[in-house]
Each structure stands twice: as structure tokens, then as C-alpha cells.
Image (cartoon, rainbow, N blue to C red; front, top):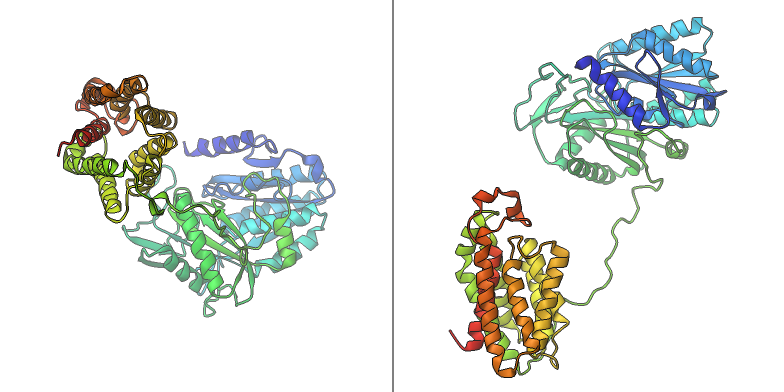
Length: 571
């Protein structure tokens, strides 16, 4: 498993990327356009697997010419490194630059391959990346090479693409390396497949200054907020008392890389990214560019590393140069600091519930109906919650009660408009804002769609029938449910069908139609006992566990009955 996963991963990368190929017999990813290397310096990097997308994901025009992979957290063998160098040389490269992270195995194996390549007449040079800021007093082994390595891939790749010589590239990136620093923090260790975790970290603790091979860090502390963690990291990275610190002062311009070490969510990473930008800007540092994502991981480690690179205009020009490497993000070339990033919304009219309204002949009738509906929903709060617990999250009564209280509060301070359509718009705004959830959206849809069909001059029974029909159709169109799906529509649709007969009913028969509609709504709600849910949360629950009526349908039936009773004059 451990042996095959690396080969399978490399194959997956190459098969998915048209610009890449594999060197037969070796774990070497190559550019698939070797002719374009002729006369230019080729770049080769690599190291152990488990750091994906590094390094194979950075192979492409404008970045690496090839990358060689070892086993998980194991340096690649010299034979494969040499094979990669010779392949690049045979493609016509004028020289080969090896970009190597500062680990003993990588230095030895890449170094041996470099010496062997020189014996074959290849012009080879090597740059060691050692930008770790963790240790105040590094050991003889020196600082480790971490995510800052990809900055060197990018800058060296741009220089090579422009036709710079091997010596020129080495000189430039060696100078840039003095202004790069990286520090990592993690909430968990990582585990090489088939092995125990590399170190133990109790819940609630975090490790500062760990490496990318699962090595424990230099300091352990309690988990804190992203802002606090980032401040701690920045303080440590720039502490002048440390021999590994990155000199950084107010006015400096930097490129920032917020690197997911493996298991952070995109949401968490974005929180850290914001914290990093804010922290740097509070110190007077200009954030020129930001990379945020997974760039050099450590298997499934739940952590993040921050890399800073001091950048002048020439460095930014090289950084912004185009590349076809599949793992390099599509970044903006606009400076992050100083850019306006808040857009004001378009001016909209005030909320309908805040508008001033004038009363009309229908206002007392509509107020009475609303008061009855609200009191009914409050009385049924626990009944609806109980029904909802059988197939939902148990809050159907609570959400309806929230809407009822919002309407009651509004009625205390406002007159009921004489125009029914305006009242429906007010109610739509209230339930959208106060009810929440899918129920709030559905009721607001219903009321909004219905509002345009009833006005002060057009509020007869036929108009109300058209309004409730339009509201129901909006619910079906946007909600995706239909009668028979065990939703509120199973009570509403039969009632609406009955109400549509108002368009032809004689004036004396209108109350009978409304009574029949209420009865059909009650029957529809009761019928949901025997229906299989095909929409809403209940659709995810086993049918045999949902044997009570649908709470949404029961609520609709109760609302319609409350309207009827208010019109009949019942208390």
C-alpha cells in the first residue's frame, strides 16, 4: 500500500494534467514539451512524498522542468535524480539548477546526482532552501526547508523562461532567500500510512514550529483564536533575538503564503488568511500578494504554515509571471494592501414593514384575522414541535411562533394598510426576517407572489383566490415540492383548488367555499400520515419512523381555520 500509493498518486497527477509526463522507470514528473527547454536553464526539485501538491504540481512552463519524488517522507534515490537531470540535458537544456530543501537526505542524494551529472558533462548547480524560522539557535544541520521553497520554484522558473543563465538565476534566488521565512503551527500530528502518529498532542493544545515530516515543534501551548495564533507566529518569526528570524520592518513589502498543512477546511484557512493580512498591516507592512491554499502539506496534519517573502518590484514581476504549473494558483497582480475590498450595495427601498400606511375599509377585518392567526400559532407551538421531532429538527412550532410574535409586535405599533397587497408585502418582509429557515422563505415567497393580485380596488373573493393560487405556485416553483410529497402543500393545494371556485361562486356562497377549503386543508394535513416524504428534512428519515402528520401541513390548516373563524366572528 505504502509503495503503490506514491506511484498511483503520480500517475493521477500526470493523467489529469496535459502538460506533464512520467519518466519511465522512475518517480519523475517531467514537462511534456521538452523541446521548449532547448537553450534554457532547466529546473529540478523534489523530495519525499506526502507534501502534495509539492513538488510535481509545480512542474510546468515558468516553474519546474521536472520533479523527482521519493517515498512518503523519504528522499528520492540518486539514480532517479540523475535520470531526471540527464533527461533534461538531452532535451537541450543549457544547464540544470537543483532546488533542494535543507534536509540531510535530500542534500546527499541530490548532491551525489549532481556530481555524477557533472561527470557526464552537464552544467549543474544547486540552491539549498533553508528558511525555517522555528529555532532561535539552529543546530549544525541548519534551518529546514519548508513552504518557502515554492517561492524559489516560481522566481527561478520565471528567470529561466526569460533565458537567464544558470549563474544569474542562482545569484538572484540566493539573494531573495535572505528575505524568506516560514513558521508552522498544528493542532494534530500526522501519520505515515501504516505507522503511528509522529508525536502526541493532547486535545486543546497546539504545536508551534513543527516541520513538514511530522517532527514535533519547539513550543506547545493552548489553542487560541486565529488572531492570537497568527500574532504569536509573526512575533516569533521576526524576533531579532533569534538567529533564524526574518528581518521585517514597517514599510517593507511582502508576499504572504498561508499554507494548509493538510487537514484544515477552506473556511478555517480563510480565517487565518484574514488574520495574517490584518496582523501584517497593523505593523505597517505592505501586503503585496497573498497565496492561500494547500501548497506544501504534511499528509493529514491539521495545521497551517505562514511564509513571508520580502519583495521589491522586480521580485513581484517575476512572481506575477505566467506559469502552466497545475498547482500554482491564479493570483491577482494587484497589491492587497490599500485595495478597496468592500462594495456598497445598490440603494433599495425601505422594508415594507417600515413604510407608513393608511387604513381602509378592510383594515379592521384583516387585523382581526391576523390576531387570530397569531394566537392560534402560539397555542400550537408545542404541538407543532412535537410533530416535527418525528421527522425533522423539532423546531417547526418555534419558527411559527417567532413569526407570530413578530406580527403581533408590528400590529402594536402600526395601522393595518387598507390595501391587502401592501399588508401581504409587510407580512412577507416580517417572516423573511424573523421566521428564518426554509419555512420563512416559503411563507415569504407565498406572500410576495400573492401581494400583486390584491389591491385596494381589487380585493373581492376572486382576487383573493387568484392571490393564494399565485402564492402556492411560487412555493411549488422555487421549493421543488408537489402535493403528495408530505409537505405543507398537501394541506394548501387542496384548499386552493377549492378557493378557486370563488371566481364563479355567487356572493351568498362564498363562506361555504371558504369552509370547504378549510375542511380540505385539514383532510390534506391528516393524509400526510400515510405519505412518504419526498421533500424537506423528513425525506432523509426512514419512512417507517414518520407516522404522524406533517407539521407544516398542520400549521397551514390551522392558519386557514383561524382566518375562517375570525370571519365568522368566533373568539
